[in-house]
Image (cartoon, rainbow, N blue to C red):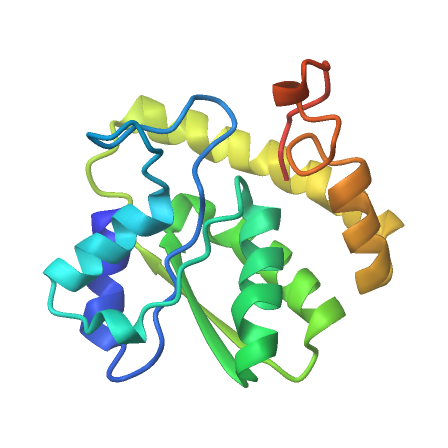
Length: 185
């Protein structure tokens, strides 16, 4: 996380910064001293503020639990309401191909006039075997995403899919005690 936020601090100027994500569906979030969840986006915002960013330039996105959610919720919570004409997405090298595919598709459905750019930071600090495993997982996830993309043609269809079929955002989420496929896109 730190290299991505360091890069954002380095190049952002006075632009809005949008830390993404509530966390992951694969493990519970860490809790603060009062027992409340610490969402990844909030931890990222804290890092940015500690790095000198004015907190009034930070827009949190704490609704997503995967890359598809990152794209969707950043779009509907911030890019559309604020009328962003350009968005730069900073991610890790191992993740950039899928991030670019997902964001271009989602933003293309919901905000076609918004130009997207991508910046990948080095995969520093990840052991070689773990990085190979992660790269393989990314390739498999990208293939599943391509299948999903081929069957959804409109923003309305994407919304329906997310909130009625997706393993995290639908009412069928395992948190409700139901078994669903949580392989995320």
